[in-house]
Image (cartoon, rainbow, N blue to C red; front, side):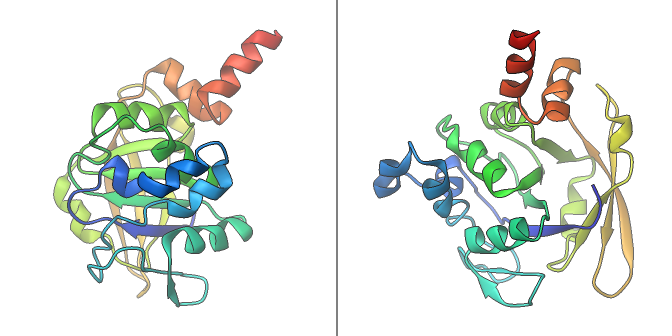
Length: 203
């Protein structure tokens, strides 16, 4: 995966309720595309300290997080979400992983995960990654595009390398960690755990 835009760099606490709000939205639980319109609307954008207001790298305009990601998806672009400590804490709400995947988020890179949310991201076939050096969070800029340079070597216990391509033409290379075992890597390669189950059932 190359040249993946940043969707949001979340600052501070980002619970499953920030990622997939409850309340009136729960009426849409049976319709993934509708409930996906609340994806990450409670997360605080580190670059302007506002919620649900992020930069669309395709046109430079600011708008809602789900709208921005839908614009990327329309152009065939995946994106990445960056977060702080204990990302995904709170309830074990599976929609908090299903919705970003539905919209085309390929990876979530954070300082640390709440364990259940990390597992839910893995089940959805997404990359759940942590900074090897937490201070690298500060290197992420608003217009960054990300290159996964060694994803073809994705293996248990082996860190991955990300290149952060900045708007001014400079770049930073960082190391990110993961906790995937061989079975979970097969979920990623197949697009989700459910796809693996379907494939095995059909065999």
